[in-house]
Image (cartoon, rainbow, N blue to C red; front, side, top):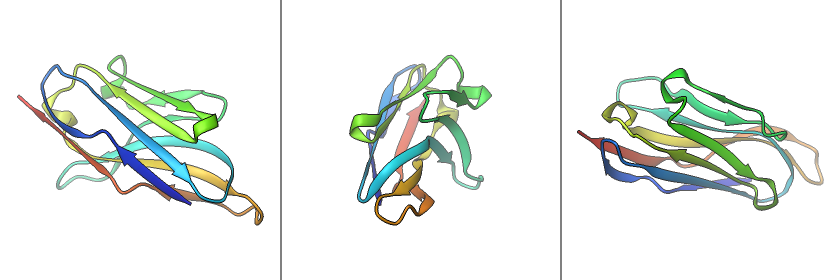
Length: 120
């Protein structure tokens, strides 16, 4: 199973970006999908997550600014980020809890990370 993230970039404060992450491989089902971020010198933290039933949860600092969604048919999770702030600057990683086909093996998988930089 591989996760491929895209959509990061450089944006001014108040701007927006949309991150995408596609899962591929021997996938039977994807349970929870999420976005994490890690700024230099800080621990990786959860930004937002969505279950297979589309129940979402967000870090308090991004509520009302970020929206997570998923397309189950495409094995893709999105993060729409509006009203970006300099403190949102970080490397963003997608994560997926995947049950593999054939084996039924279930594990967490991570994408390679995409950089988001918000200038003031």
